[in-house]
Image (tube, rainbow, N blue to C red):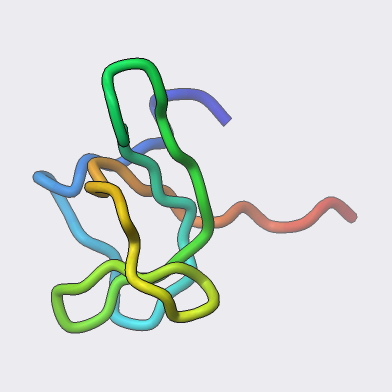
Length: 66
């Protein structure tokens, strides 16, 4: 994956209840990347907890290796 695969949340949001890789800065020196989903205007972690940092970009989860 390259940076070109990231989609800005300003350009497009994922469909409801769709697991994605999400990323966002929590401070000036740290960038978080995790798996979560977007539902009814709210980002959540894969386990259902609220995301504690602003999600700025996301991408679909790639197909697993064969």
